[in-house]
Image 1 (cartoon, rainbow, N blue to C red):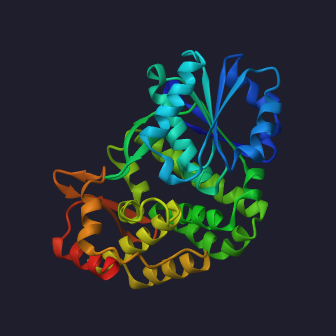
Image 2: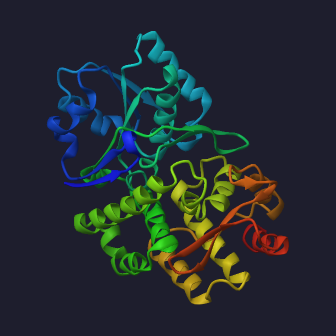
Length: 358
């Protein structure tokens, strides 16, 4: 087992990465300390792993709340149904929410934990690659709104992240590929050596090599933990983690959170951001070419849906990253170098949207 720490003073917490962690009572029990546990999962993950988790918590009262699967269910209405269950079962403020699932479960369970009785403890147990390397770490929780993705949420750090890589063996191939987009992101924004490593090992990652996956997860979490420790509430550096997300969220919102996986949209969004960076003269075309080739090797889409430039801009305009009326974008100035900026020519954004969204 490898251990990282998200250093936030008294709210610091460990990220535990390894195999067989879900089977370890010694590892899980201290997170509960005899308190009520609320296991939030979905109809896909729960049949695979809920019983294993409950077995490791034998003797502990565990209330299960099983949600429908899919980003389209990450809503206030679903969260409200969870609150109804907690209140009906008289769950107190000393409860611990266990989020067993991918990014949707982690975001929604985290939002519930942040709001219920003004905040209860949360343990993230990610089951997808995307959740292992990104959404389970850092304390961002949210639900979607028809007008935009993750528009309603709160920062609520977990007390631990338990990343059992064994859980990735049942992950559908499409979701594994989607998770690779977030891994690639870390290389693009701050670690060109890691980007080189991903290029050299993408086939091993797709083949689910335990060694390759462990390294990808560890380095991704290490980068994110360091950034979150320096900028928990995204006042500066943490915004770099949004590379590709503003364009990607427009794709997800316009397609109703159904047709595109989050990682797929982010991957395409990163390519759009890279091509806009090239359009501005800030990025060598060779970097754009390498990114496009890597996304294609990872089996990720590289063409945005033709939803129209105006519609894409409308969704981007209600994104959380709008500041003083301008869309803030994460753009690249080189491989491993990213900036957050709203200082770009409007024509460059219009031309980029027209080229990719029609």
